[in-house]
Length: 86
Image (cartoon, rainbow, N blue to C red; front, side, top):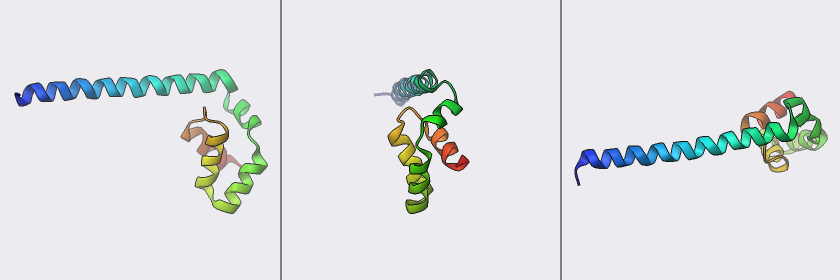
C-alpha cells in the first residue's frame, strides 16, 4: 500500500474519532445544563459535608472523584471547581 494512502486513511480515522469524542462531550455538557440549569443549581445538590469529609480524609483528588461518582454529568472541570470552592 502506498504510504500516502495509509496516511489519508489514518487522517480519516482520526477525524472520525475526534468527531465522536466531541459529540459525546457536547451531549454530556448539554445533559448537565438540562439537569442542573447552572453551576449554582449543581452545587446546591451536592452533599458539601460529605465532599469536605472526603477531602479532609483522603485528599482533593479523592474529593473530585467523589463528586463525579455522585454526579456523573459533572465534568472534571466542574467537579474540580466545586471542590476548590468549598
